[in-house]
Image (cartoon, rainbow, N blue to C red; front, side, top):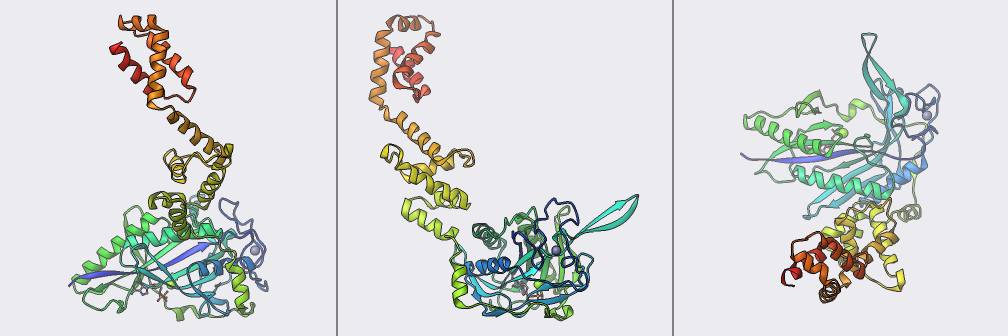
Length: 447
Ligand code: ADP
Ligand code: MG
Ligand code: ZN
């Protein structure tokens, strides 16, 4: 019997809002002194009331729209009850049966459709630090991250291998950055991935997904996501081939040993005793309000890529590199505008400018679009000295300096430098010294 992977993703994105999800504390927490961005609300003190962050809600809808989701007219927050020391209230405010966005989809390059089940909004937890003080083991908790807006994207189990997952995740990361809602930096933990993996019998119809799954928690690099999927695929296949069914469980990625390890058997939704958050009224959106949010969405990477190919006649390779970040894409278009403005002439094609940017790895932070275009133009002026022209100038110099030429032939090769200098002076500072040297030596040989 053959087995094929079935993979679904749960993705957490920490939003880059100024303030936290339900209080006014700064949401920024990376490298901040512990427990300095806290208040009664995010510390879960009794009687403190949550007030939802409007921007976080709008940003979640932004991503939902970009992922082709339907935005619910009415959504609400719910309490997800569980105990853990980094969760001071004893529950997390999340969304259960009425998330902000549902039923989206994304099409991968090869045409594979990935359905998005939901995009919802919740709050992040605090951070535990397991350490030792005066030789005694202890755990410290930092609540700066507690209550930071956390968006969750849940896909249907539509991925068939780790490459599809990788492509989807990189596209999603780029999209989130284009939308300006998060830095989506995996190292900082603002993008966290949980792949769910099972194996189905190849002979069974595709819609019949296995009745178990293994969730690998909180992976913080694309490479580890790929490795964890590949590891699980192998581990589960081996079990199935022995006639066993893999356990439904939560596992973690062990970086040092390059494998997943069992953490706990998976809890069910009813274990969390979800119920509506009584302190926050339901959220309602009119079609007009949603249209308003839609206007905040800039041209997205995929559309931009297509437009660059069509409008500027770029190759898919060039376009793909230029749209990698919105900053670079904007810079490129700015440079194209400048291109027509220096001396009112267009010296270069969009493709030449693209190559210049790509091949020379231009630092767009330190090189202005004007400087870039001037450099491209200057490089083209070198080429403006035609082969015939260069040949004529070299002949001229050799005639004017016949003594030096004769010396060279007698073996005084040091005069070569002098002759090169003379030619360069005539052609200008942009002259190609290497080409001049090559031609001079060639001519001196037959002089
Ligand atoms: P839970 O309620 O345990 O969180 P869900 O059914 O809500 O489980 O699914 C969570 C994630 O697991 C989703 O991304 C979904 O696509 C994925 N998933 C569900 N069933 C499977 C399966 N059999 N194999 C792989 N992934 C699955
Ligand atoms: Mg889950
Ligand atoms: Zn607070």
